[in-house]
Length: 606
Image (cartoon, rainbow, N blue to C red; front, side, top):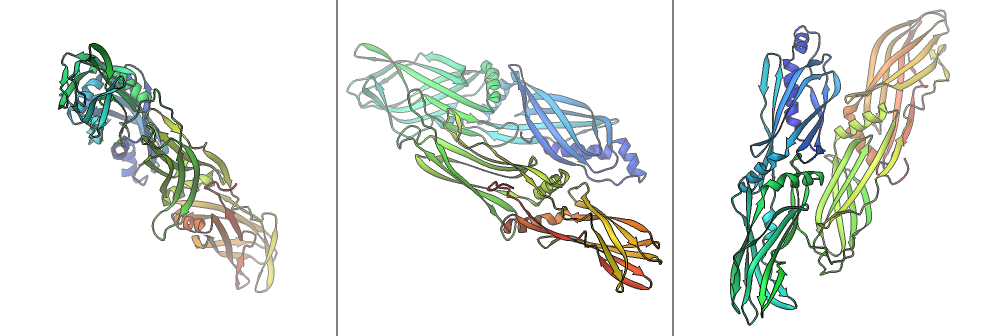
């Protein structure tokens, strides 16, 4: 899934919050405190694609920190343009923004009949396109057109035809031409046709004239035949002569909607096969001869919705050529913990290409490697690299950073999931042979990380306490459990029953606590209290200890430096007044140290 609408939707949400009448009244009356809503995540991808339309699906995860939501009175209208050709328009009505987390799903359909008009603009603009989204927000009595969000992408199909390499052409077993240079350019595209002009500089090494009486061509994109035909002009090259000639072809733009359907269904990947041939008359014989120096197979990819990179590569024909898939020999990952900046993961992989040097595939392969760690479906880190590979061994290296925010998000999910994390480590290595993408990596590694950080709390013990050397009561039924963690803090809900065994009241005037992980202080506070425990009675004291999640980034670094090991230290105390004396009493049943280990990279069971 790709991000297309993120900034627009953020602006939309901000506008809704200040414009919707319900929340405005609440703010004016002082009933709520306004916080800035945020877009937590935007996921955009292609939906159902057929011959007529291409669906664009967008999911927007929002967070509204306010206690009052926006009612279902908001309409969002938007148009998707490609080089000012409007290819899709949609309306989503009755959108509301509740408090907390919510999801907005938006769907619109792109008219495939608009593809020829876009293609014309793309070709005539030097194979460059700008994708834009223009949203308009409407609430009762108010309409706002937001600035268009624009993402450019380019293709470079002509580069596949450009070469200064000397090649030979044969008729039967005889060399009839040496090709010194090839070049190509687009003509001016119209609504109906797209001209492609291919030229070649050639030399005749034979002792007789080489004559091409007729030239023909076929062009397919993902097996959709876009162009075919023959030319009337011929080429005549006298012995020893060097000359240039051209072949002009025409794309039938009416075939482009069918191609577009295949392009999107194939993950925005197209194989364009351009085949040229000639009719040669030699010594009274007529032969149809392919022109390999002009015939090309080109694979190109786009990322229209995501604004990501596009690729174009010339690939060999595989009709009679053996191809052996490269193999992934090893993958090793390790933590990176710099003195400053974000932590990360560095991954090294070794790929072996068994194709022989000099073979057609030895020099036409590239490899894409990705490394991703998911913790409770939260992406902790991702790294990727792409490079060409030759025969034999290729070493790959990729790395990705882990931000403090991702650590906090994982921690919150871990605590709220009962101290349980589902871990997925993906090590994907894919070889691109042009005609196919071949995965050579293994299956994702899955595991579970469980901890029990509050487990050492002794809820069954009864411990006496003294004031001025005299036992006056006991502490029992100690309890500690996690509250609902947020990005800001993680609460520990604790309680203990204090019993007064004496005939005079006991007063608790202060409660204090300190929580550290690897000596990183997550909480260290004391609170004034006024709790009276009457003679020969007992009282349950309850308190909430908020752990500061902004300190988790500093803790995370120590956790990695210690080999994914942490020591949690928890201590509680109360200040007790009795009979004119004051004593600090440690709540030993709540005080403990706990060592926790993880194995996020999957080297061992966690």
